[in-house]
Image 1: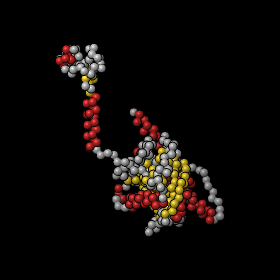
Image 2: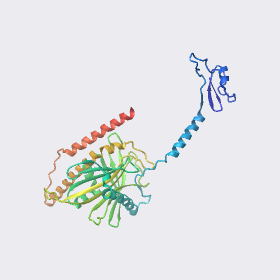
Image 3: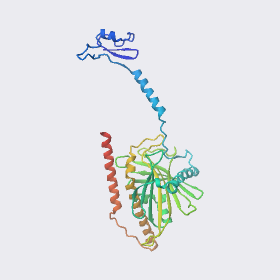
Image 4: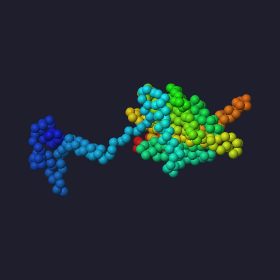
Length: 363
C-alpha cells in the first residue's frame, strides 16, 4: 500500500487511503506499532518495509549540484563555422571574409612558431602533410599541405582556378559530386566567386555541401600568388535538404621553384593551409555524426594521396598544353596507377574505421 505525506511517498501494509494527504507524520514508533518494520532478525538488525522517497528533495539536490557545476565551469563557447556576410551579399563583404582568413592562415604558414606543426606524412619532391592544434577548437585543427608541382606558377595557378574545378576535383577527390557557380563579383582587381560544392556520401555518412567564396587574389609584393576558398553563412543560401552543410576554409600560396633537374621543366612550390569540419557544427547547426577523429587520423594518408593526384593532374595538363602548341593530339591511357590504389585503400580504411566506431559505440 502507499500513501503520501507532504510530498513523501510512504509504503506500508495497512489499509490507509493511498490518496490521503492529511495523515500525521509517520514516526518510527508508530511505524513499528503498525507493523511497518519487521521484527529484528537473528543478527539484531531490522528489515524495513517503509521506504520514504522525496522527489522534491532529490530535485533540489540535483538542481543545487547543477548550479554548482555551472558556477565551476564556464558555458561552452559557440563554435564559429563560416563567416557571416548578412542577407545583402556584396563584393566588399565577401572580400573581407576572405581577408580575415587569409591573414590568419598566412601567419600560420610562414610566421613564427613553425616548430609547433606536427608532420604526419612525408614523401618525394617535398611532399609534406602537417597538423597544428587549434587552441579553442581542438576537433578542427589546421592542416598544411605542401608539394612541388610541375609547371610554372601561372600554369599551376590556372589549374587551381574555380573554372577548372570540375576537372581537377573529379581527378583528385573521390567524393566530389559537383560545383554550382552562384554569383560573381570583382573587387578592384580581385575576382570573387560565390559557389556551392557538393560531396557524395562519405562511406556510411550522408552527402555534404559547402557554401564558400573563391578568391583569385592579386600577386603579393614578393611575387607569390594567393588564392583561397572561405566558407560563408547567409540566409540567401540556406541549408539544402538532403545535404549536411559542412565547412572548409583553405588558402593556397604559389611561388616559383627551381626547375626540374632531370627535365629542365619549370616547377612551382604550393603550400595550402586549411581547416575542415565535415559536420554542421556552427550556430543552429544540424550535426552530421562524422567523428572528427576519423579525419585527423587519416589526414596524412588522404592529404598525401590528394597531393600526389594533384601533381599527376598538373603534369597531364602541362603535356596537353605542349601537345596543343605542337599541333598534335595527346595519347591518354586508362591504366591504373598508385594513386588509384591509394584512393581505394583510403576508402576501405575509412569504411573499416567507421565500422569499428559503430561497434565500439554499441558495446
